[in-house]
Amino acid sequence: MNIDISKDEQKFMGDILTKELEDVRVEFRRTKNHDYKLILKREEDMLRDLLDRFTPAGAEN
Image (tube, rainbow, N blue to C red; front, side, top):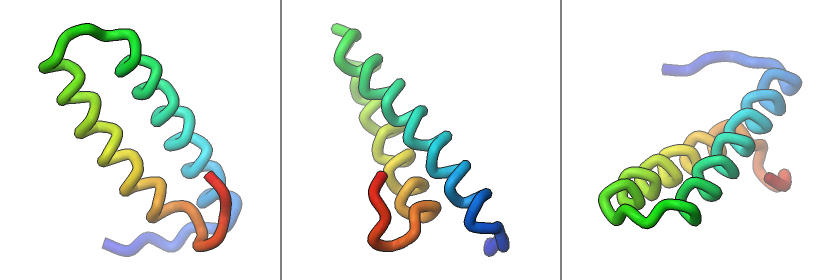
């Protein structure tokens, strides 16, 4: 599915995904539950993939 979005919308989505990724990393460091860490790792991978899609090539995260 392709969605046309403006550069501002693209940046906004990148900012949201970056914040969510930071939150997942904090939660990963805090938890001691191995199963929960596996879930968080999968979530982190998904967020990174989405962030790559919304971040223009060559831009910094």
